[in-house]
Structures are given as C-alpha cells and as structure tokens.
Image 1 (cartoon, one colour):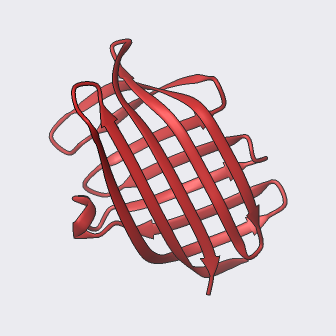
Image 2 (image 1 turned 30 degrees about the vertical axis):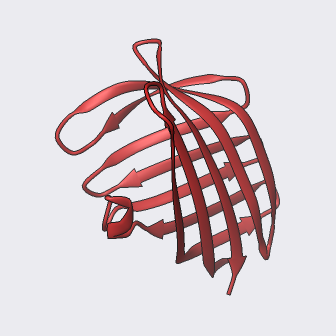
Image 3 (image 1 turned 90 degrees about the horizontal axis):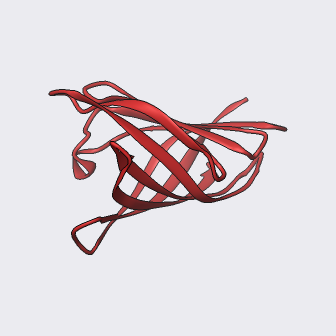
Length: 141
C-alpha cells in the first residue's frame, strides 16, 4: 500500500579535487513497503537544482537499491554492495557513462518507514570523480 511520507535526506558529495559539500532536504513524498520490497519517491525542489524532477529509490531484498530520476534529468543508478554498475546519466544538455561503486549500504525499513544509508563512489572513464553518501530517513504520515 502506498502511503504519504516525510522524507529527510542528507547528501554529501566530495569531489576528487575539493572538500565535501552537504545538502539537507526534508520533503513530503510517497512510500510503499512489502517484505522484500520498498519504494520511496518525491519531487525535487529548486534547492537541489533539479526542480520538478521525480526521484525514486527502489529497494529489493535489502540488497539492491535503484535510484531513478525522471524529468529534465533522466538517470538510473544501481547500488549493490561491492559491485560496480555502469549507467547513462543524462543531465539535460548531454549524457555520460558513469560507474557507480557501492562501498557500503544499510537498509533498515519496515511498514512505517526507516533508514537507508548509501556510501558510494562515482567514476567516469574508470577515474574517481566523487565520493558520495546518502542518509535517508522515511516516516509515514
């Protein structure tokens, strides 16, 4: 069953040539949970630079997380512990092939919400581009 949810996101990105940048966002979205499967989604705000883009996280068996963005930016990134996944990342004015390597993942979800932590790096042409972390808290409302 799809439920309304309050979603709190802290994202930290450290570029290869600079210090960390952190963005915090609290937004309303939707959340669906069944044993072995969860889906959360929300609409990005102006604050993220992706205003109007729909972002969703699909979690399967607590082991694989797929982030999808659709709208003026279209992207899909797959997070799977210690595995690299290549994907085409369309940023609106062009697309590039990136590799997402998941360093660590914590999935603590139930029918009321929970926590999703992702720690990963992004590589372009096999060169480190950035290290990234998402800390997401979901609370049904």
